[in-house]
Image (cartoon, rainbow, N blue to C red; front, side, top):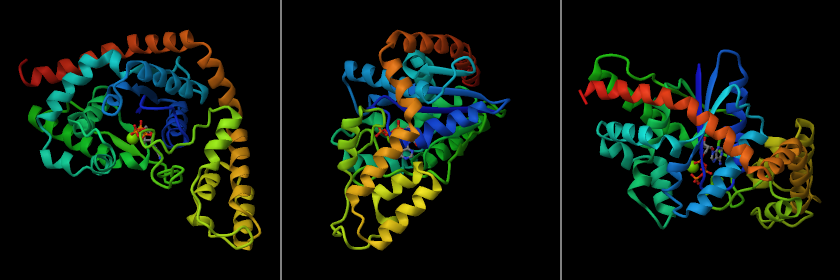
Length: 323
Ligand code: ATP
Ligand code: MG
């Protein structure tokens, strides 16, 4: 089985990326017989960010997050999309020409982002096509992603199917999304989907003081401390539920329902739960961020290893059109 997933270098890696993509992908990559393609989607980043220095800094922190969470470069393909840009963008073109315009116009993620962002460029519009190229280029079978990506994987399947029909043979593997129902879409501090581009995220790799500051910004309702509160409608509780032990979650639920327990208490508990859950990862992240060369070396090794795979796929596609 080939597993593939990517994260944009559009900001710092956040809790949503880690629980929604990084940890599920690493879990799958440990299963014997699986091959994993784990990459930094830095071409996608240009849809939202144009500053090279920021893209580079984000790329390093996303890569450090993968490594800190346990990515083993000996047994996975770990690379930057931009270093294989000729293959990704060439396939993007072939796929664009078999993608109906309304399919892209109706994509949830495009509609969502185009309503919220100031810069609505053509790259944002064709984003799902580049994403399909990322997947199909490496014959990936299984795509562990957050729920926000479900529709994009459906589109990828459609595009692969059209090309296979044109070629009258299996040029592409038809991939499937692997969405952890337990994780689903993680809310950001404002209750919308946690996103780098919405700047509503929790960065679990921040120094303690800054992390606590970020957690304190989580939006709550105005129920007074002494009154009972509805746990399942509260962002802090929802986040706590994802990383605390079942006993601790049950206790917090009781505290909410009884009253006399404030959102400040819940936020402090969430802060402590994050420190505990990410103790090891936070240390490793710090190490990698202080040793950039280690990160770059690992990425370059991965890039050399994936290149022949991408090249072979492109060759297969060119042949269909007698290019
Ligand atoms: P951007 O705002 O630039 O789109 P993002 O924070 O949405 O950034 P992506 O790079 O688009 O992050 O997504 C990387 C992976 O993280 C994808 O698999 C996506 O499904 C997952 N992911 C992103 N946000 C969340 C979230 N809030 N909950 C669960 N998974 C998420
Ligand atoms: Mg996104």
